[in-house]
Length: 81
Image 1 (cartoon, rainbow, N blue to C red):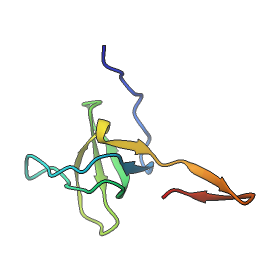
Image 2: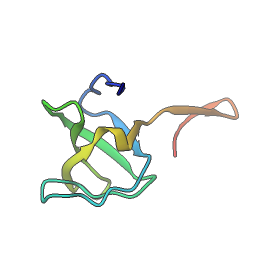
Image 3: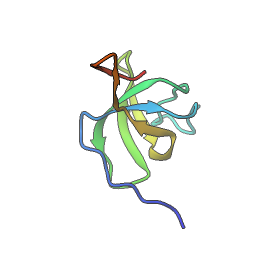
Image 4: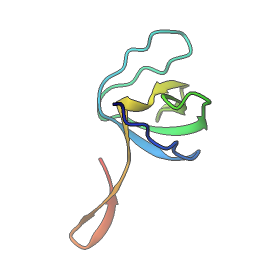
């Protein structure tokens, strides 16, 4: 049984759990730990259209990224990583 995650809204920041080389020209390659921003929620729940810190855009696999969460450190809220 595969877990279907609810789509993240546009503008959501996510962090790569794995590196992704891409399989087509539409894909956005990234490395583990990269921060990506969701631009468009696609009709396919397994893919997002996102951009990286350099402004490059493309499709990314939803199961390769996790939502970027805030972490409390010394009483202050900071973003990971």
